[in-house]
Length: 170
Image (tube, rainbow, N blue to C red; front, side, top):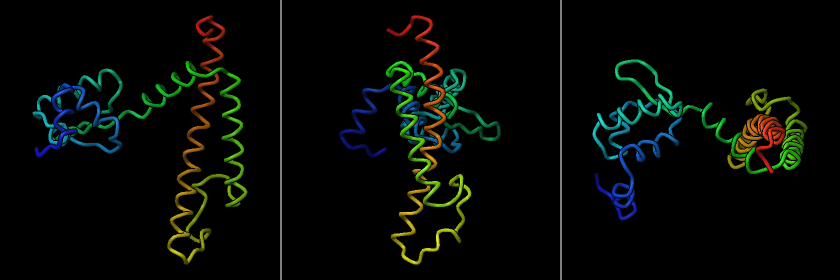
């Protein structure tokens, strides 16, 4: 593998497991151990071993087949985000964030006249301008992100209230 200075440091300062983890975090499609090995600059056996450990930990998802495929476990990373938000913010701060997200979602609903971004059709966009079309698609991506964040913040509020009741939070 041809590496620059940053790539050399990444390879030298991180173990095979850490490099595979680093790559897995950004992987939302199934890749086999050989693909991880190539990107992590390690052996396929080393990548497979790290990936299997990550599956056991719940960090990775495995799809059986020949070859087996691996990707990040979205549920794990959502849970991790919920836990971090609940730990770092009070329930009232999280409720304010939820209110802001709800206002943003309502703005999208009004703008597009539909309840969800999935309900927007190509005909609804009616745009001849290429840049305007990209802007609308970016809007829809942002709306999906807002909807995902609403669910995460709701769960973080529940978690923060639970841990505050247990005396875990100050």
